Picture 1: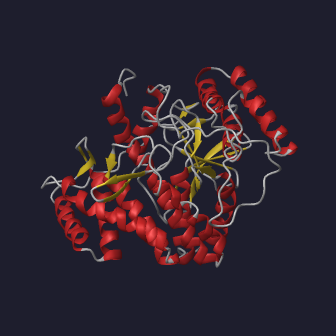
Picture 2 (picture 1 turned 60 degrees about the vertical axis):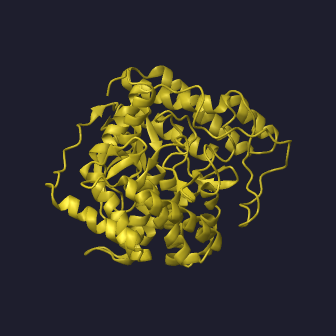
Picture 3 (picture 1 turned 135 degrees about the vertical axis):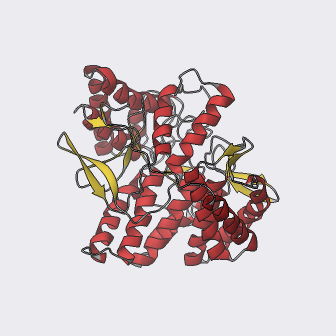
Length: 457
């Protein structure tokens, strides 16, 4: 990818490639993951993990060529609150969620201020400060590409802190991510572009983005959760439902503390600059897939707390960008793939958002979610014909990018899913027609991913 790409052309190229990063929502198959333990790496098959595609690799490599814009993409920064007492337990559904805003300044300054305000404990303050100092020292001592990876993660954290986005509820995810990057790059490992990484017995997935280190990947983790849910219901030969269920519970126990509060709703954010947007940003596709996963596991375990959390995630579909992902369009709502791109409409992401909402509604009967689905469904049915060229499907509008074979298969599968769920003729007929388009072209073979390189890409 040329580093001189800029403006609308650059944004279109990055977003086209980047959608692969959010394009695989659920899989029960095991996919290769790089496991890092005590400074050593090995490739393992990880149950439930969605596969990495060539388009994932293109998206990962594209991050190395971009520069962070001074504005655009991140949510508006709320005003710092007055001093309060120690944080309380997670609010009940319907109660306002505290964003934990501290202020603007250096990372260590914000940590000191949060401690003084009683927003974090002494133990958390000392742990986060030690993690930051260790990372800065590693960033100075490392060399070459490993140094670039480590310092990129530090730089993103510093910028978030300076702009007032280092809130207390983001600290667990950001400092875990920083700690893992320091451990990883200090060992000078070999890693491929877009490779997913786990640490020891942990189930949590990170992903390597070129020049951006390792990043917690919300959609990959939600996809893994859906895959493990499916495996727990239908265990493969030689495995057991209890084994897959235990792996899923471990993933949930690791993932749930990493949620953040944005605009009064819970979400899992992305913490690196991407496609013209600066962190933190959210994806409608990831948000809906997370809601879907939590509703399913609530049934699996008979635990209503998971579906209560899913309910507190619906605000993303009620708020406009850059905080949320709702755009009023075509008599209803279009739900965006990226909160920082309010005029970029990706069909596969929109349809999967509707599937996630629908599956949540089937479990909960939530009338608020039903209204959100109905508004999205209205817009989707009006938009759908615009993506049909008569021979193939467009990937996005208004850019009129043509879908790759992989995305054509993906979006047709989502149409099948909506047809099966709703019985709506427009979905069923379009799916049938697009299956016909696919049948007229040779199936594209899977291309090998690029080799692993020391200190990555």
